[in-house]
Length: 117
Length: 110
Image (cartoon, rainbow over all chains, first blue to last red; front, side):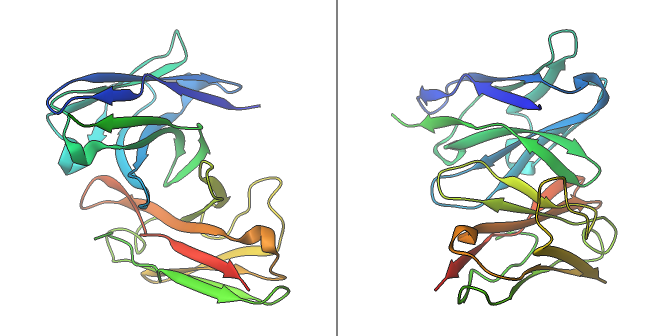
C-alpha cells in the first residue's frame, strides 16, 4: 500500500523558513516524479513544484520561484520542500503527491503551514 | 484565477446524473492527458480519473471521464449522498512548464 506522510508544518513568521518532509513507502520511490501541491484555507488546489526521478529537473509555480526548493533523497525514500522568505499567502495545507505523466496518483494527508506574526 | 475553468457548483438529486466541465487551452488540456480528483470534506484529494477516461482500481464505473479538444468532462451517474465533495480537474501546461488545476466544483446531492 502506498503511503505518503508529510511533516514539518507549523506556525512561522513572515520572512521565516520552514522545511517540509514527505516519507514515502509502498512503491519504488526512485522511479517516480514527485510533486508538492498546496491548498489555502477554503480555497482550491495549487500545484507548487515537481521534481524528476533522479532529482535533476525541478519545476516551480512562478509565485514560489527563488523562495522554495524541492529536493529528494532516493536512498531515504523522502521528498523535501525548503521554503524561505515565507509570506502570508503561502499559508496552506501542503500535500506531497506521486506524479505520473499529467496525473497525481497518490496523495499524503497534508501538513498545515501558517505564516503569521 | 485558475488556468483551468470549472463551474463553482453543481447539484442533482440522488440517483440522477451530473456532469462537471473543465475548460482549458491548447497548451494544457489540448496537449496533455486530463485527470480528475475527488476531495471529501476534511480529507486529502483522491485520484478519480487519469488519462482522460481511465479509472484507478477501486473507483466505481459510476465515474467517467472524457476529453474533446481543449475541454474535459467528468460524469457521475447514480448519485449518492456520499458523492458530495469538491471535484478538481488537473493536467500539465506545456507553456507554463507547470501543473495546473481547475478552481474546483462543489457537488451537492439534494
